[in-house]
Structures are given as C-alpha cells and as structure tokens.
Amino acid sequence: MPISLTVKKIDGKPGQVYYPLQINTIPKPVPKAGEILVKLSAAALNHRDFFIRQHLYPGISFDHPLLADGYGTVIELGPNPSSTASSLLGKNVLLTTTRGWESDPSGPEDPSAYSVIGGAARYDAGTAQEYIVVPEDEVVEAPGHLSSVEGAALPLVGVTAWRALVTKCFNGDVSAVKGKNVLVTGIGGGVALQTLQFAVEMGAHVYVTSSSLEKIEKAKKMGARGGVNYRDGDWEKQLLGLLPKERKFLDCVVDGAGGDIVSRSCKVLKNGGIISCYGMTLGPKMDWVAMGFLKNIELRGTAMGSKKEFREMIQFVGEKKIRPVVSRVVKGLDNVEGIDGLFEDMRAGKQFGKLVILIEGESGDSPKL
Image 1 (cartoon, rainbow, N blue to C red):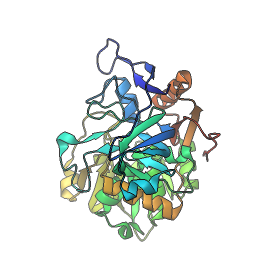
Image 2 (cartoon, rainbow, N blue to C red):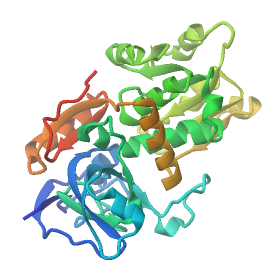
Image 3 (cartoon, helix red, strand yellow):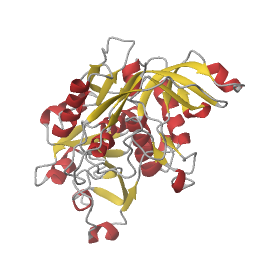
Image 4 (cartoon, rainbow, N blue to C red):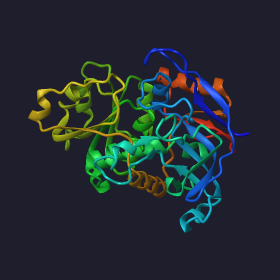
C-alpha cells in the first residue's frame, strides 16, 4: 500500500520539542468529480517543515502529510473532468502550495480559508506521500526542461521569491527590475537563491550577504555582482563600495532574516527604497529606526504568494529555462534516516539550495553548486 510521512506527537513545549517523523500506510486515494490523482515523484523541504517539527508554526497537523513542494504525474481524473483537466492526463505537474488565495496582490481574499499545504490542519494535502488527490485547478504543467528533483525544488520558494521581488519591490512590473540594485540577504537558502536567479534574469544588479565566503563566491558564479559578510560590523559600508559609481544606492532589499536589517540597510537604500521581508529567522521582532521614516523607506511584509503569482512565476521559469539550485537529494520516502539528515542540514545552515526527497522515477542527479 502507499505510504505517507507525518510528524508524530510527543510531549514537549513549543521550541523545545522536536517531533519525530512517522511513516504511515494509507489507501490509494480516488479522485472525485473536479479532482485529479497525481503520482508524486519528488518532494522538497522548506524551513516551515523544520518549524513544524519544533511546534513553532501555527495550525499544524499530526495526521496530514508533511511538505508543500511536489512534482508528479497526473494518472487519473475524476468523473466528468473539464477539458483543462483532460489535457493534463499523463502530464508532469507542479502542485500549488497554498489554498485560499487566488489573485489579490494585497493578500488572501479570505484569510480564514488560507493555508499553506503540508502538515497543516486546515487542508489534508501534503506532498510527503506517494499519491495525492487535488482539485483540478491546483496544479500547473511543469516546465519541460526541469527534472522531477528540480521541479520539486521550485514551488514554494519560487512563488515566495517572485512575490517578494516582483510584487513587493517593483509593484508587479517585471520590466522595472532591469538596471536596479537589489540586495538579497542570507544567500544559500532556497528563497534567497530563487530571488537571485529571478533578479539576474530580469537584468538587475544583484548583491548578496552571507556569513560564508564560499556561498558568496557561488552566488557570484550565478550572476551576483558581489557580496559581503553580514557578521562584519561595517558590512553596509563595504556594500556601498561595491555599488556602481552611477548608482551608489540600493533600490530594494529582499530579506528573510529580520534582526537589524532596517538600521543597516537604511544607510545604503535610496530615498523611498523598499525592504521586502519574507521571513524573520533571527527572531520574531524587528527594530524600526528614525532613519527609516526620514528617508521614506518602506518595510513591506510578504508571505508565500497567490495562485496568480504562482502561475506567472512558473511561466517565467519555463520561458527563461531557469533551473532551481538543489543542495542535496535523498532517495525514498521511507528513508527516515536520510530525510532526518536533510533536516539536520537545515538546522546547521549547511545547504546551498533546496533539500529534496526523490520518491521514485529518477537517479536524483541535479545541478549542484
């Protein structure tokens, strides 16, 4: 019988507990009217999965499969399928990662119905399983140049990066990115790397931060103009020295760490510059400083993205033949030891790119930087 992967509930306080992974045997699902059955071949981890295991994420489930990222093949349709669903039969697809957010650039139309899938109480969907039934409109045909591993690495980081960069920094105008100076913090994580790839392809001058010189050098090979170590006390001064003479300021910052990013980047941002913050790994609070309002800086929060942004992102990836960066792959959804190792990579910050589980169907080979 098919299997799924969930977290097992044990006693412990949020932030102190670490829920173990649990393999479950489940019946093969059958699609109803308006649904499709997807045979999954690869799935990927995100930081939210690590937070779920520590009970540091809201609305978690111990019954629903983990993981939001998945790549698979449509193998069965429900009764009376639409023409769109019929055209997907036998095609490789990517699953949308959220529910309850169609197109509003401000945020989910109905916050009470909104959730990321995977280990979530609100929706039973999750990609850490061999088969999944989803509504017909919750998949997008995968770009043909991507392997299953690369495809699984794309969805959540892709839509998060797209929204943080395009929607939030440039008000949805891809053409406005060209020639602008963009700082991407914490290079090595999935969203940061995807933002780098998108911004470079759009013609931006991209700069990065990291505590690892090796990661900065890898980013430069991917098109970054330069980078600085965020542990240096004067990194913003160093960054200013890297900027081109004709544009000695940043237009926007895409940040996933929080901390003192406002006070540090304000010194380099232009008047009216934007900080697009998609995460706060350094803590749940950030300081706002006087220089922020004196320079008319805008701090814009952003999380995941809408179905419309997801589809725009997938189209761009297909047109530009972008390949997501994969850090490491393990084989087998029942390989608990190997999957635990991926989580340990995340805990230690070792990864440069996405951490992927190859469920079946390929060798797992993928570009690694």
